[in-house]
Image (tube, rainbow, N blue to C red; front, side):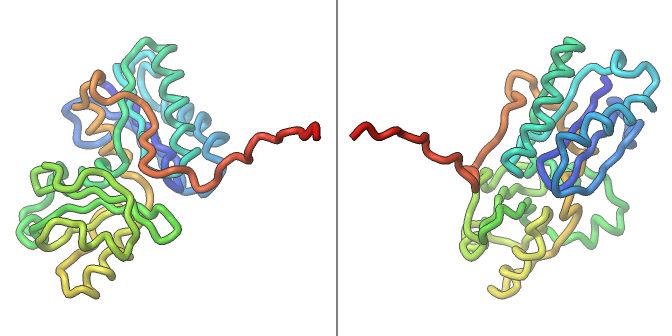
Length: 236
């Protein structure tokens, strides 16, 4: 199987192509950016696919991050993934950004010395939800979910996590680690802390069930900006 993975949920745009059984992607590209995801994504996809033998016709599946993340950014990659899926007549699967952040700590092969020195305990994915809040998910070393995806004030997050030392990844990892240390709880910051690890979006997309992982936005909280109320004329 060959999969194209896309992400625009956080302050970056990323794409990679991975073959099943491979540990390294055929092509991978990621660009940090706060705005302009919609304008930059398609040119990035074109650059990536131009380096793949067989091009778009060689793809068997597309994976796309569905959130949590930027309310509008999430929709950019989902719309592109759905469009390519229809055009190529291949499945499109959704992957949580929180799961993708945790995946390197659960799935990623590490040298023996790293495995031995790694802090055991709870793997926590934490993404900055702004306004003093964080998106959270916690799992065990084997990937079993211990805390389902949620959004919490940073001040409450540590108390909601399962007991044990913490291995924290994601954009809010430094803030969450400081909160843990303030409460005298063991914690380490590991892995990516800005962009979603796109290689692991591809790896999770490989094993996802298309029936159980639809490419739909995962909105855990309401958008920060709401449209104005409809204007009403007064005939009084």
